[in-house]
Image 1 (cartoon, helix red, strand yellow):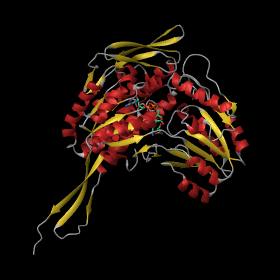
Image 2: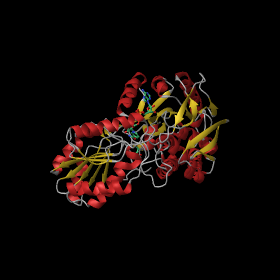
Image 3: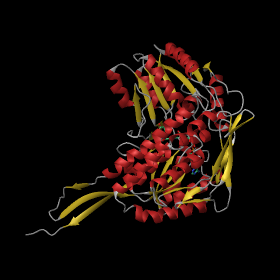
Image 4: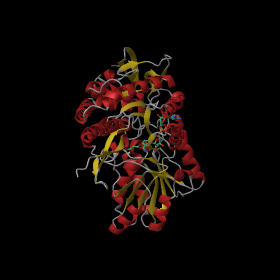
Amino acid sequence: MYLVGGFVTSKVYSGGALLLVKSRNLFPALRMASTNVAALQKDKAYVDGKWVSAKSGKTFEVTNPSTGAVLGSVPDMDRSDAQAAVDAAYKSFQSWKTTLPKERSDILRRWFELCVKHKKELATLITLEMGKSYPESEGEIAYSANFLEWYSEEARRTYGHVTPSSAQNKRVMVIKQPVGVVAMITPWNFPSAMLTRKMGAALAAGCTVVARPAEDTPLSALALCQLAEQAGVPPGVVNVVTSSRDNASPIGKEFCENPLISKISFTGSCNVGKTLLSQCASTVKKTSMELGGNAPFIVFDSADVDKAIQGVMFAKFRVTGQTCICANRILVQEGVYDKFVQALAKAIDSQLKVGDGFEPGVTQGPLINKRAVDKVESLVNSSVDQGAKVVVGGTRKEGAGNFYNPTLLRDVTTEMSVSTEEIFGPVAACIKFKTEEEAVTIANSTRYGLASYFYTNDISQSYRVSEALEFGMVGVNESAMTSPETTFGGWKESGLGTEGGKYGIDEYLALKNICYGIQHKA
Ligand SMILES: NC(=O)c1ccc[n+]([C@@H]2O[C@H](COP(=O)([O-])OP(=O)(O)OC[C@H]3O[C@@H](n4cnc5c(N)ncnc54)[C@H](O)[C@@H]3O)[C@@H](O)[C@H]2O)c1
Ligand SMILES: O=CCCC(=O)O
């Protein structure tokens, strides 16, 4: 690693190729991670236990959204590459499904331990390719690794049951078996955790996997493969195909139409989820869909406002507002509205710092790309045109990188697009309401149903409202509600199925009813 013209330039050897990683703010993280990040950065995809190029030989570049610097290139695979990966996964399924749950558990445990051991290098890769602040990246690696640990424990608990029979000469039991090869498509906002939440469950159940990570963040996925290999995951059990956005749709089609695949597990936007669902009809595949959200964050008059501010700072500004469970509509009862807005403005000013994720003290990294900044800017501008007022921010950050300043809007109404659309950026949009019924009606008046939050000190209200909200997840006086134990999933157009928690592994298991005819002694 050496310094050139104020930049830190790091030699990164990747699959034999020398990459120069250049960033003003890289130094602190690379110092933490030493240069081992190089050993985990791959420039090939991972199929059948081998590091491979695209058959076409094509590659695409991965860039740092904070600086625009090119981090490296990975294979731009197409539909035929995906097909080869499916063949490998299908072949490996025949033996993986017969392994003992304890063997799968031990392998997942070793993979978890390796992720923990390499957390600094893995976190460095996330901040490099995705931009989130380095402490948030370390947090993601802990979260991501914990899914492997959780499923190493769940692997041994896939109990079936015996059903009392209605006939003397029959016995009936239900067993659970792995569904088969699972195709996974994941987004860029949690480059590691969205994969392990799926892969941990699938492998524990006895399924094999072909995954296509988002084009913005393939490096974290490939690093995970390397650790999986070291943990003893056999060839073909985990396969990762990388591609540019241009090949996302053809690969998606292959996944949906290939009869060797039994299930698609997708995390991403509602629009792409709906496309995949319609494509899956041709082969009647099982699906898990973790889609977008439009989370209400309700603050009632009785709430502890300080606690609600602490909660909204996390629920709104985590990962610069780019999580599917981020607070999207902040509904505040009229009695505390002004006090809440004032306190939130103060918290934003004093607690948030925008910049390169490696810079000490930065809490708000860049948005993923220029398109995302344009979208956030247009949502803010159109709200202001319709009467919303900017209390804090409301502008892009000057200079290079895809940065948008943390923004607080007041006098927002339910009709504005900032309320109806998923913002996916650092914009807190505050709406005033009068009654509990009005708040619940507004909260539920969306086709999304992923996460919701409310703050109250009225115990009866906490029961009433948590039962009335049409969302898969409800935080009551709590905004940090995800963990491996959480049953994570959306209602309505936010998705199908759940991940994590007690039920996560069931998504990868098929029920089989076995009826025994027995000779009954006279
Ligand atoms: N519910 C959840 O658990 C969850 C978690 C994270 C993100 N999300 C959602 O993801 C969205 C943000 O991620 P995004 O912008 O990357 O979403 P996206 O839907 O644009 O992309 C998600 C993935 O799908 C791929 N893709 C795009 N078009 C495809 C096609 N036609 N066929 C197959 N694959 C295709 C992309 O390359 C990417 O890998 C938000 O809506 C967010 O709420 C949901
Ligand atoms: O973006 C969605 C995932 C968020 C989480 O798992 O906490």
